Length: 466
Image (tube, rainbow, N blue to C red; front, side, top):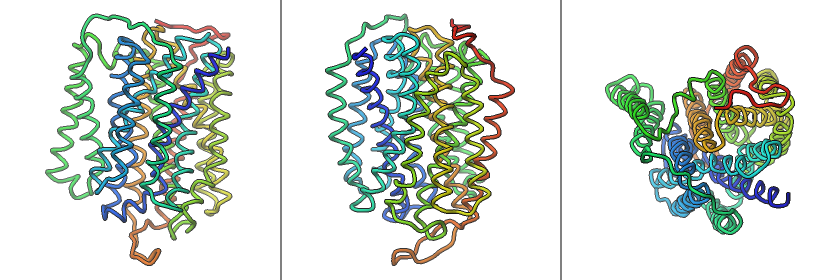
């Protein structure tokens, strides 16, 4: 039992550290945009570029883990993540910073390995709770990153966030090497789907570039070429996957209706989460919002961190009795309530704190149920592969969320003097457009969870596992 608890804690630390690194620059987004003198739409790549690489690499790392061993791949991912942290400290411009952030995406790709290790080495009931704990770390790590990053940015510089992360990442690599036992590789015929990985990366990169373009470029020849390259990448990916011996995306698995529903819910849930998260530093810090300090970004999000860390394990314990559908319905109602609170009431610290707590609880419930629901449909020896696919869908949502917020906020900006310099800041109406988007997506999640999703567990038994 002690070994199981230690394993959950160690893998939870992995997810928490990676997500903390992904989000630590959130509070510094206005400073980075100003320091590098780049338009807000390009600055909005800072968060999603990590997720872009993670989305493409997750299924690849998952299949590699199923074949060559989870521990080995986990160490490789953490090593690349560490290199990304080192590169971010001295980034002279936005492009070097983005490359360093892209390397950090290898940490996101390690998440399916963590879920597979839990499922392989623990009893089923305890595994569900462990998956709930690790799932909660997705949001908790993000919140902790925002909190720590806001204080470091406020008192020192956004670059020092990397110095905070580096020693912890080194310690984590040592702990994984020492405490996680080696696993036996599972030999499967065929080579890894490298071509599928690069075609998927091409599709995602070009798609993100297209969404990041100013309106006049998006509708011009440049936008047409970029969109065409993205579509070409998608077509190549589908063709490659249909022929690959070990595909990144198992289309037979995706044909199962419950799995497809979970994929949609996973995408929309993390999309909504990052839409709101991306906006928080702007609405808290800028004069068109509350005009508070960088430290307040973290303080306002702290209660939500606690709610997230409670909701994940609680949902994992309840799923064997109530199934995955009920938590998705309840979580979507929490999402909707938070969006309505923000949309109806005047902006204040109290409203932001309450709404973020409600939102965080709902997010953790849905994300946990989503992961467990997908794993109920695959064999144990393909857990990393299946969770790699759902992780990619969730990560795609996380990649698109900041872009959506960046587009909304950039459509209505005013020039004003802030901190002794001239800044371009969003008008207050833009914040309410973001809140309205949260409400709309929450309604879609609720509809899918209530009317389309069907439980795959009856009286605690897993059904339809192939």
